[in-house]
Image 1: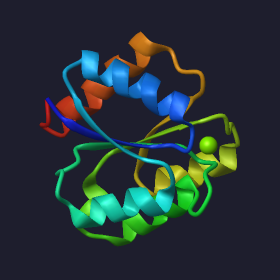
Image 2: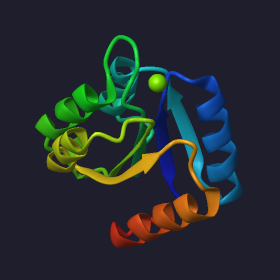
Image 3: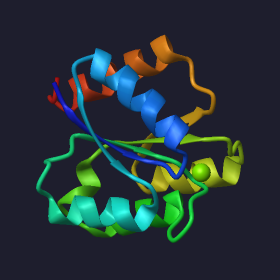
Image 4: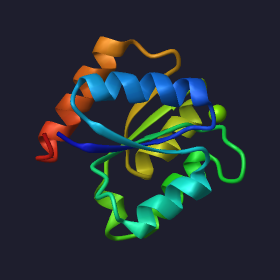
Length: 127
Ligand SMILES: [Mg+2]
């Protein structure tokens, strides 16, 4: 089972995702903006295996957080799932260049998303 970091300014989304991931046996950690998420990652105390990240957040948005993660040789190997209402192809393309492996539009379909998480974790050897 894996450690998943959820970065989203919406508590509703964090709670829903936390519950869905917990049912799959994953441990979750949470941050309410990119800056807080990045700080948690840099402290590296939880050994995060996968990151869920919103785009629109105060302090630091999701793509800016991805950009910072991508600059860090240790953190950049962590797969990132964007979970957002943003459908912009340009943003998706920027995300892809910054290590985003899945771009999921809110509201997400639980079963499909959990299958996607399992698949990515299996690829990284973190199941
Ligand atoms: Mg948001």
